[in-house]
Amino acid sequence: MLNRLLNAATGWYVRRGLRGYHHYPADKTAVIFIDVQRAFLDAEQPLSQSLASLAQLARSRGFLVIHAPVTANTGALYQTPAHRRIEHALSKHPNASDIAPAVKPVPSDIVLPERKTLSIFELPAVDALIEKRGLEHLILAGPLGDLTLDSSLRDAAQRDIHTTVVSDCVAASTSAALELEVRYTMPRYAHLVTDLDDLRRRTDQ
Amino acid sequence: MAYDPSTTAILLVDPYNDFLARRGQAWLMTKDVALSNGMIGKAQSLVEVARDRQMTVAYAPHYRWRPNGLEGRKYLHPTQFLQEKSHIFAEGKAGGKFLPELAPVEGDIISSEHSCSSGFAGTDLHVQLQGRGITHLIIIGLITNSCIEATARSAVDLGYHVTLVTDAVAAFSPVEHNLAIRETYPRIGHLVTDTSSLLETLKA
Image (cartoon, rainbow over all chains, first blue to last red; front, side, top):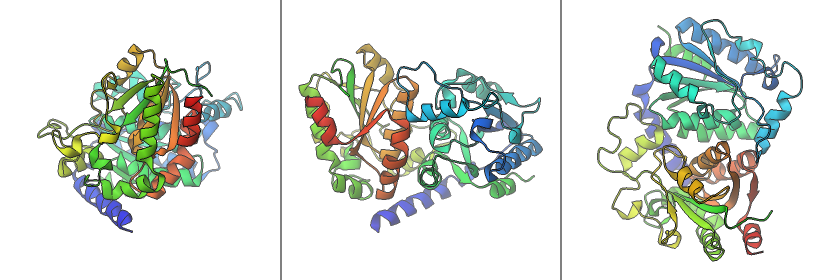
């Protein structure tokens, strides 16, 4: 009971203290779709619609849209179950690694090279892009919330960047894994974990 | 599986008094898990066996709070914000010292401090481990779904073989601890085990 109260009070205090960060100037904000690829996103899923709405929101606000696709970590000395799951999904059909139609890239988007790691920040191109564009606000979304998005969020938190996770644009291996991420772990790293409607209100100009 | 003592390291993340000592700042939050799974004694057993086997013992310490230490940072992340307010792990204070039972000895690796949660991010840990030819890491300490998990995730991306020990770690709440060891560890770690099994393996 005491433990729960302390955690709740701490969470409230942090959220209150970080309120001042939640601004999204168009020229300093990017939405990063992490592994939003056919292999991991069924067009029939509600997540597909949410991600499409986030892409639409990003473009309407003038945010940079970045696609960060993953590829199989074939040949790695030590593969984790996460890597094997990714490899299996990507091998299911020839177009599995394509960016999902829900967030289909447009010419102004950036599509990063495919990476083999869990975190997108293992690609030097990500830091280079952030520096070149002067990005200070990253909005993260993707279907592999407990695998690659989590790793990427933790690495984003290392940098001097304001990070937001859109909870209804995230999925995970199981509902329990999703609960752990969105309710407990991600709020320890992201400055804001919110939903699409709230993000829409916050970015309304 | 068998561990080659010459290429395996036990990596302790943040075994600070502020997390694990009775007067530590965060003890009221960590004690539920730490007392129920006995992680202090278990971590101590693993370190002792590692030393007996002449394995590398490495420490990945969190940033110790100091005045103006985070000056210049525009967006403090939640942990940093809290640390700026609470002064947890303060440099030179008891809370920022290692719990005596889990303290380093001469010859151990002590990396530079990590500012967020991964023991590798922005530190010399990888360089020091590579310098000793380490390929396998057994990661223990605090916090189950925070610094332990973040360090494990980085280690995996850096190509290490990662073992996670479910009862040699603790979290801020039982629900987070239980969900992390059940849901996350088996997906991002190469091997998930408990102290008893691991001790048998290490002693074999």
